[in-house]
Image (tube, rainbow, N blue to C red; front, side, top):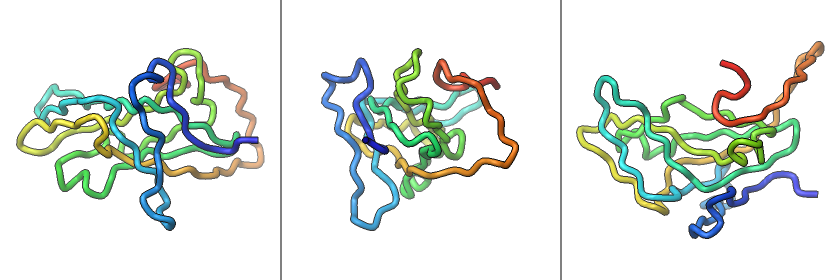
Length: 151
Protein backbone atom coordinates (compact mmCIF):
# COMPACT_ATOMS: atom_id res chain seq x y z
CA UNK A 1 0.00 0.00 0.00
CA UNK A 2 1.33 3.43 -0.95
CA UNK A 3 1.70 5.81 2.03
CA UNK A 4 2.84 9.13 0.63
CA UNK A 5 4.35 10.51 -2.52
CA UNK A 6 3.95 12.64 -5.61
CA UNK A 7 2.29 12.16 -8.98
CA UNK A 8 1.84 14.38 -12.01
CA UNK A 9 -1.54 16.14 -11.88
CA UNK A 10 -4.13 15.73 -14.65
CA UNK A 11 -3.46 18.01 -17.58
CA UNK A 12 0.29 18.08 -16.93
CA UNK A 13 1.19 14.54 -18.05
CA UNK A 14 2.91 15.60 -21.29
CA UNK A 15 4.65 18.73 -19.91
CA UNK A 16 7.91 17.14 -18.70
CA UNK A 17 7.10 17.47 -14.99
CA UNK A 18 9.78 15.98 -12.72
CA UNK A 19 8.77 14.28 -9.48
CA UNK A 20 10.35 15.96 -6.42
CA UNK A 21 13.43 14.63 -4.65
CA UNK A 22 15.31 15.50 -1.49
CA UNK A 23 18.70 17.09 -2.10
CA UNK A 24 20.50 15.14 0.64
CA UNK A 25 19.85 12.03 2.72
CA UNK A 26 19.17 14.13 5.84
CA UNK A 27 16.94 16.76 4.17
CA UNK A 28 13.44 17.03 5.68
CA UNK A 29 11.87 18.54 2.57
CA UNK A 30 11.35 17.65 -1.08
CA UNK A 31 12.38 20.35 -3.56
CA UNK A 32 9.57 21.50 -5.83
CA UNK A 33 10.14 22.97 -9.29
CA UNK A 34 8.05 25.34 -11.39
CA UNK A 35 5.99 23.65 -14.09
CA UNK A 36 6.14 26.64 -16.43
CA UNK A 37 7.67 30.09 -16.81
CA UNK A 38 6.00 32.71 -14.59
CA UNK A 39 6.69 36.41 -14.02
CA UNK A 40 6.12 37.60 -10.46
CA UNK A 41 5.58 41.37 -10.53
CA UNK A 42 7.22 43.51 -7.88
CA UNK A 43 4.91 44.41 -5.05
CA UNK A 44 2.76 47.53 -5.36
CA UNK A 45 -0.63 48.39 -3.85
CA UNK A 46 -3.30 46.36 -5.62
CA UNK A 47 -0.91 43.70 -6.95
CA UNK A 48 -2.10 40.23 -5.97
CA UNK A 49 0.21 37.34 -5.14
CA UNK A 50 1.24 35.17 -8.08
CA UNK A 51 0.43 31.46 -8.30
CA UNK A 52 3.21 29.26 -9.65
CA UNK A 53 1.96 25.91 -10.94
CA UNK A 54 3.90 22.77 -10.06
CA UNK A 55 2.04 20.25 -12.22
CA UNK A 56 2.06 17.98 -9.16
CA UNK A 57 -0.32 16.43 -6.69
CA UNK A 58 0.72 14.67 -3.49
CA UNK A 59 -0.88 11.88 -1.51
CA UNK A 60 -0.48 10.96 2.14
CA UNK A 61 -2.11 8.90 4.87
CA UNK A 62 -5.48 10.09 6.31
CA UNK A 63 -3.77 11.34 9.51
CA UNK A 64 -1.14 13.34 7.62
CA UNK A 65 -0.83 16.64 5.81
CA UNK A 66 1.91 18.31 3.84
CA UNK A 67 3.38 21.75 4.17
CA UNK A 68 4.37 24.05 1.33
CA UNK A 69 7.32 26.08 2.57
CA UNK A 70 9.54 28.79 1.13
CA UNK A 71 13.13 27.95 0.26
CA UNK A 72 15.72 29.59 2.49
CA UNK A 73 16.96 31.58 -0.53
CA UNK A 74 13.45 32.90 -1.31
CA UNK A 75 13.44 35.94 1.00
CA UNK A 76 16.98 36.89 -0.12
CA UNK A 77 15.54 37.19 -3.63
CA UNK A 78 12.46 39.06 -2.38
CA UNK A 79 10.07 36.11 -2.65
CA UNK A 80 7.76 35.50 0.31
CA UNK A 81 4.94 32.96 0.41
CA UNK A 82 1.67 34.89 0.54
CA UNK A 83 0.20 32.65 3.24
CA UNK A 84 3.50 32.07 5.14
CA UNK A 85 3.10 28.30 4.76
CA UNK A 86 0.63 26.19 2.86
CA UNK A 87 -1.23 23.48 4.77
CA UNK A 88 -2.62 20.82 2.45
CA UNK A 89 -4.85 18.09 3.83
CA UNK A 90 -4.88 14.46 2.71
CA UNK A 91 -8.31 14.90 1.10
CA UNK A 92 -7.00 17.55 -1.30
CA UNK A 93 -5.51 14.71 -3.39
CA UNK A 94 -7.58 13.91 -6.50
CA UNK A 95 -10.46 16.20 -5.45
CA UNK A 96 -13.10 16.67 -8.12
CA UNK A 97 -12.36 20.25 -9.18
CA UNK A 98 -8.58 20.32 -9.55
CA UNK A 99 -7.24 16.77 -9.08
CA UNK A 100 -5.16 17.99 -6.11
CA UNK A 101 -2.76 20.11 -8.18
CA UNK A 102 -0.88 22.23 -5.66
CA UNK A 103 0.75 25.57 -6.43
CA UNK A 104 2.95 28.05 -4.61
CA UNK A 105 1.67 31.61 -4.14
CA UNK A 106 4.32 34.33 -3.84
CA UNK A 107 4.68 38.04 -3.23
CA UNK A 108 7.72 39.71 -4.78
CA UNK A 109 9.24 42.35 -2.47
CA UNK A 110 12.29 43.03 -4.64
CA UNK A 111 12.75 46.19 -6.70
CA UNK A 112 11.92 44.53 -10.02
CA UNK A 113 9.82 41.76 -11.53
CA UNK A 114 11.21 38.26 -11.02
CA UNK A 115 11.04 35.65 -13.78
CA UNK A 116 10.72 32.05 -12.65
CA UNK A 117 11.70 29.56 -15.35
CA UNK A 118 10.27 26.09 -15.77
CA UNK A 119 12.42 23.78 -13.66
CA UNK A 120 13.52 26.45 -11.16
CA UNK A 121 13.20 25.30 -7.55
CA UNK A 122 10.37 27.36 -6.07
CA UNK A 123 9.64 25.77 -2.71
CA UNK A 124 9.67 22.70 -0.52
CA UNK A 125 7.18 20.09 0.68
CA UNK A 126 7.36 18.45 4.10
CA UNK A 127 5.01 15.60 5.07
CA UNK A 128 3.73 15.62 8.68
CA UNK A 129 1.41 13.70 11.04
CA UNK A 130 -1.30 15.51 13.02
CA UNK A 131 -3.25 14.81 16.21
CA UNK A 132 -6.96 15.07 17.03
CA UNK A 133 -8.65 16.28 20.21
CA UNK A 134 -10.68 13.75 22.22
CA UNK A 135 -14.10 15.01 21.13
CA UNK A 136 -13.30 15.58 17.44
CA UNK A 137 -16.32 14.98 15.22
CA UNK A 138 -15.38 16.42 11.82
CA UNK A 139 -17.52 14.98 9.04
CA UNK A 140 -17.17 17.39 6.11
CA UNK A 141 -16.07 16.18 2.70
CA UNK A 142 -13.79 18.21 0.42
CA UNK A 143 -15.05 18.75 -3.10
CA UNK A 144 -12.73 21.45 -4.39
CA UNK A 145 -9.48 23.35 -4.30
CA UNK A 146 -8.26 26.51 -2.54
CA UNK A 147 -10.64 27.58 0.20
CA UNK A 148 -13.14 24.84 -0.60
CA UNK A 149 -13.78 23.85 3.02
CA UNK A 150 -15.33 27.17 3.91
CA UNK A 151 -13.76 30.56 4.49
